[in-house]
Each structure stands twice: as structure tokens, then as C-alpha cells.
Length: 54
Image (tube, rainbow, N blue to C red):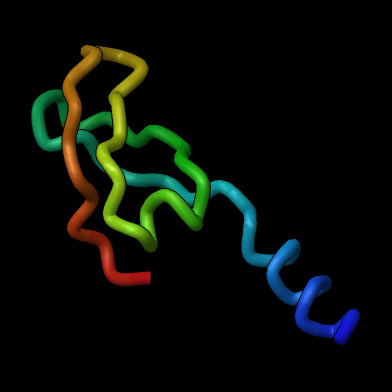
């Protein structure tokens, strides 16, 4: 059972997603991108959903 816990913790890392408004890459957590949550660009404050396949 501890193997599942460790596997889940390893997936929580940052990935880069390009902003559709300003085209700059920003880092967001893997789990947020995978769930399809709204992301906020730290440069232009635009809210967007990532279309990146993980």
C-alpha cells in the first residue's frame, strides 16, 4: 500500500504551460493541469485551461 502513496507524491511536480494570451511559459503543478483546472498566467493574469496532453 505504501507504493501507491509514493507514486502519487512523485507525480506532483511542475510543468510548463504556454499562456494563450501572452505566449510566455509559466509553471503549474502536474495535478492541476491533468485535472483541467483553470490556470492563471503570472505575467498577464489571464485565466486559461491547458490543452496540453499529459
